[in-house]
Amino acid sequence: MPFKKTPEKYSAAIKTVELGTGDHKTVLGGEGVMPLYSFDGPIENPPRIGIEVDDIGVENDVPGIKDFYAGCTTMVDRVKKASTIPGVDFVVLRFESADPNGANTSVEDCAALAKECADATELPIVIEGCKNTEKDEKLFGKCAEVLAGRNILVLSAKEENYKGIGAGAGLAYKQKIGAESADDINLAKQLNVLITQLGVSADDIVMNPGVSAAGYGFEYVVSTLERIRLAALGQNDTALQMPVMTPVASETWSVKESIVEESDIPEWGARETRGIDMEVTTAAAVLAAGSNAVILRHPQSVATISKFISELM
Image (cartoon, rainbow, N blue to C red; front, side, top):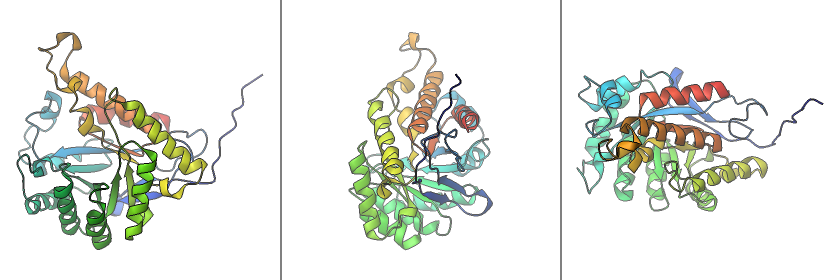
């Protein structure tokens, strides 16, 4: 007797959030099925891929990334080159140098550079900060101002700074807001509610409910993403129906497996291969668990995940 699968239908759907403008805008979310379940129903907007470009340069990156950006002397040059990678849907500007415990680049200088970079590409722009809550609040507000009209996403607002970011970037300049929590469905829902209570529309919020590199407490990441999707679709929980974006690159390229040189632990093999494997494995897993977009760094990772998505759609 042949197997006949019954599609699982939901009355709810994930909200759609548009990033960018014009012909190059990208849309996140909109599906009414579980992640990658195209056999249960149509997925109009497949998962999207962003490429991360850091303002500190590529000197400490692996050879494949250095070689790709060979001849690029500025962040603007790297943005132009990154925008040509097949499969890239948006560009992520990461301002690591803004960290007060590092170079402490001023908010004004970072915002001016963000404007130059945004002018160098037609792709949608996502802004990542330095993970210092106070500095990021100021940075996101200023970037939202200088990029008014570009429909950017600032990633991310946390419990400690969501008021300033929500008001300064979301309400003042109508930019999209990333809501970042720590691998807990209740914390994710609470932050979404708090941001909407400021007056930011739920249609302008993208969730980042937590991420780690595969193998580093990753079961919490996967279970949180799955529970969010089940609540959003199965229970019609409107406070959890926002699309999810996962910054994979910053996590996977900072763990031991991606940092240790082959000369230190020869049995692990080449550092670059390990880093790509970690990035691809993590990205594939979060997409299967519920992420609508991933942020990657290595061009080979982009190619692999782009093929992964296309063959499942």
